[in-house]
Image (cartoon, rainbow, N blue to C red):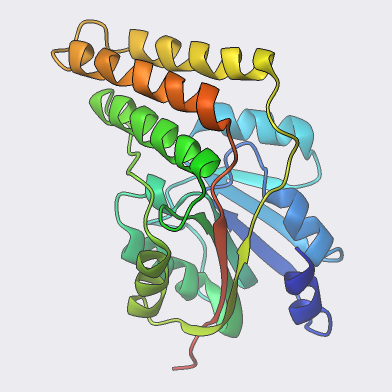
Length: 235
């Protein structure tokens, strides 16, 4: 992300935190932006952290919730959260906690997909995401539908952050092959099987043919993301 590199080029960042790190996808971005920083990642899912540790053995990972970070005040220069706002039980509380553990004048980075203004192929991604989020919620997993672009900005402002700048980030890739389309269809049915004994099963099964038709017609493209950089206010 070139704009992040440009913004932080002359800033002294020695410690950075990745909240909701999952298997560590955003760690690679943080490494590029903060090549000299000590990186720490946190996530409540043990299996994801085990995967992250294998990929990034030099990064410190901890099992914890973003809503309750077990770090002293002002422990980091920067904290980031990527593709995880819609997995939070309390968005505002997490953003407030991130500000608590960052030094005054430090930065918060939010990278989040949004649900409005998408092209047809991105609409397929959104609909597949919302389908999966319904299944996860039935299974007791926190997984909300994607926010709109403005809703993401509103959450950040309401948390008390001063927004320095924001930009849209679109992931470009070749159109999916027929094999990749078939694989995405298969994942829909696999996910559905996890709720086969639930009353919502038939209703959810009825949604899949429409999504499959859209996959055939429009292909698949990752939804655009909004990247926001905010500054932690000094008390």
